[in-house]
Image (cartoon, rainbow, N blue to C red; front, top):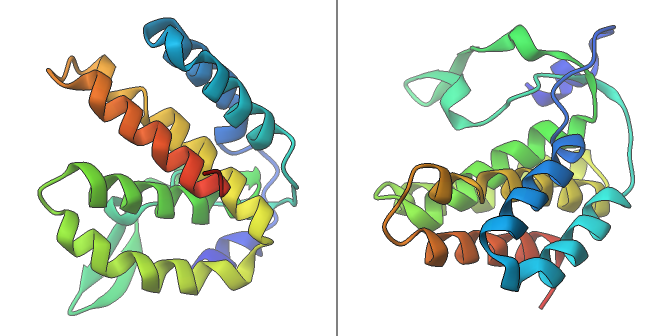
Length: 171
């Protein structure tokens, strides 16, 4: 499915998680100033990562797939499809599964799917590009606990920043 998007000749730009990474990083630094150095280091690695271009879904993750009897039968939310980095689609999927594995009740299922999904998408992209794309999405998702006023948002946000480090191979 991801190869199908990558092969499309789309003219409009797709959503770009790396472009939004600076804004997400600034928000996280404002609410967790003691994490400024770590977030600066994460941003430097994300923004300096390798880049390739092609057609992308633009917001590809598990909730965008229609599945029947274990088979993907459709994909939704294609209004953001366009020209972008194919690794961003794969990184978005991996980032969402990492967050589900870490923070949600359904985490056991995500933990089971994650190795298979990583094995399926990894050969399609350079390791550095996939790592930067996954980390950029995770940085954006790290703003979520604060924005929804979770009682333990500081702990959740730091846990998500740990996932950014994990995606970048830091630590």
